[in-house]
Length: 369
Image (cartoon, rainbow, N blue to C red; front, side, top):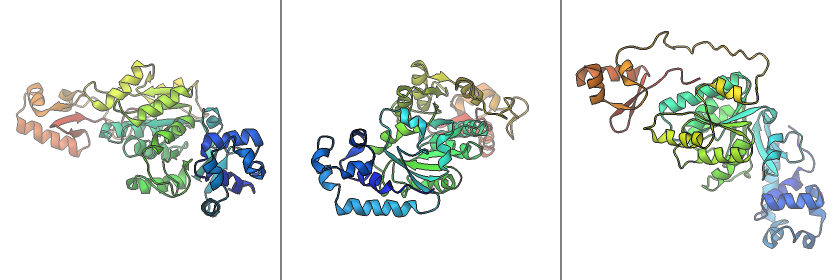
């Protein structure tokens, strides 16, 4: 993507320490495009920007950072998108504090597509991850682009699912685009750069910092028409994203879970507060103002490996809540040795997950769709 000749002036303002997005937007409102801002006397700018920022505006470190960003943009698939660009996502213009510019790597056109944010716990259960991937896959196959934050757990599962459909996926980073965090998702990030889109409002070289991630969350929700929370504890970043979505006028969805699971409590809090309870991707599609791209078929084939009938044996006695071996012995009328042997077989088959505290939980291979 070619950049406009005025990009250097956008970068100069954006990369000046202490200026901040709010002051940047005030300067644009008052004086026009960045090259016009920079043409003004620094004394004229002092009403709108801190003195320390104005002192740094023409400094050598800022000039070096601008040169570095301009060199980065020259690489194939790299772009810096400003508020004045047609490629700037329209939905972000609706939020209270849109970033003056976005760094992007990959398929920039995805920023104009209808999208859904899917977020949740970093410490997701196997079932939660399976659900997130299945929801994301089905919604992406329906034409929605899946937006998430590249974190471990639910985010990573959502991105994987998104990549399996035509909607693809957008990852919003809390670091500079030249830094992948967490490193365990480096391969996933590379795949998203190749087939989806990585975006960040943070300058190149920005390392992971705790305060950047809540700020990043408003962009995850801002880029999307709705936000689906799959698993979340009561105090979690996912709920911050959901609150941002609600404040931005987006639909908020939540997947219910076991009353005994700490990772269901955040979703249940959202549902009590008015989030829409969803059990399938169809529930989400129905709520999104009748979103239905051409060619979408509402009838869905059973996922590969889905049993044609209800599973018998020990699974029939497990239910869907975590359960211990003693309880299963009592329910099934089997010895501890028999139950343990069967649990091991089911675990190896991907039908049961071992949880902390000696508990086991039934898994649905196809996830909730």
